[in-house]
Length: 321
Figure 1: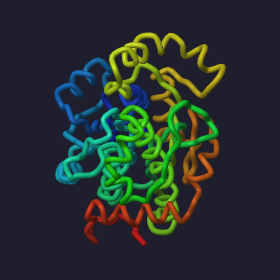
Figure 2 (figure 1 turned 90 degrees about the vertical axis):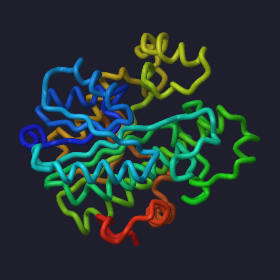
Figure 3 (figure 1 turned 135 degrees about the horizontal axis):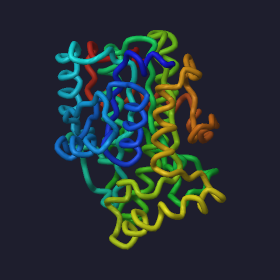
Figure 4 (figure 1 turned 180 degrees about the vertical axis):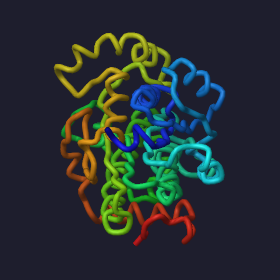
């Protein structure tokens, strides 16, 4: 049995809805103490009440606000004696927007700021609190890989600063839906790039802490399409889940329950002890996109992200350069 399931706490960002909720369910069933980070604490608490009984709690966390990320981490440190040792972090929460001009509290493009920068800072702040052996799981997406032909526009790498502060006219020229989808696929490329850059540093500086990326595939019925036009949102929420058995014949698709369980497995499965720097699609380890293995991009993203979030020297869990 995994050390996490018997003695550990796991943080799940967005652990009250969609894949995150099912991940929380699986972690609770595995015996973990789960800390859910959510923008909507009341909604998250209500969602947890519908899950199997287990040790869980909700803490306020808005990944689109660096101040909120710092406050969340500080509160966990302050209350560390109230829960079992921290052995896992699941970076699950994410947004996909159709309004590409949206910005975070700190002025960054909202998709990049939420899906990448918020989690980047959170990991730095939490790694020192992890008790080894410990694991980090980062939710990426097959949309970052052109070979998968998901129908979502492929990523467009412009460097960390270019993604954080994109040219507004260029976004408008592409159209809001496609621009939002491309921002999403690019943020998911960043999740993979950052996972690999972090892995290299953890091996050297934090042995016993592993990190892997995860592609849930197409999972209809989640809240990811909450910003879509009404017709598309209705199809995604109500028709899509029934089509998963058919969709599996043509692409990587899962039910929310299966996707969440596979995500929790990256933290719970004793067979994955010491496995790090890998990319999983569901239960299978695969290669991510060729671009995601570009070491120059990995390093540029990791270094520039530290500057973007104003990472202080005493906040850096691993070396930035």
